[in-house]
Image (cartoon, one colour):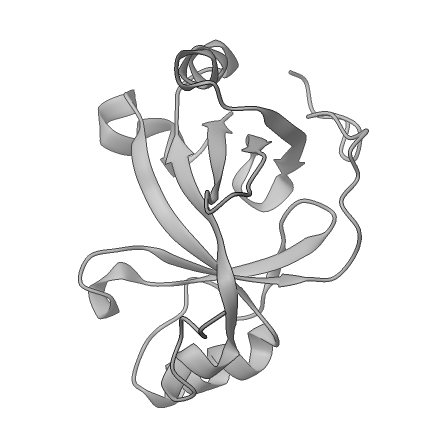
Amino acid sequence: MDKLFADTGLGKHIIRTHHWGIVLPTVEKAEQFMETFGLVEDYRGHVEAYDSHLIFTKRGNGQDAIEFIIPQSGVLKEFNKGKGGIAHIAYLVDDIRACMKEAEEMGFQMLEKEPVEGTEDIIVNFIRPRYTQGILVELIEQVGNINYDATFTSRHGNPE
């Protein structure tokens, strides 16, 4: 299989596209979208740093996963006037701190000073969209195994 990313710049750190992030106002809207397009749920989680429930779909056969983001509070709650929409593209990288360092050397600014915990298997940071033609880019490093038994509340005890 051909390598999809160049061995230069940030491309040398990218393993693959991890997912496309879509903000929706409710779990029910995410489930309706999944049903309409025959998407199969892979796992759920909650990101404390952004107070959002997550539903990841399965990926494979050339299809990237979709991450449905259901904000419980904060700025994402008003994304696209509360209607939701496509939020970001996420890349799985081999070393998030090295990738952040290179991005900063290129003059890019990251959303966070240090990576934050995503679901329990990943750490994440974002390149601010003013440096990427208006597209919010999430960088992800896998740091553990996916907990397929997780719920929105299992790690943090947040109300559903």
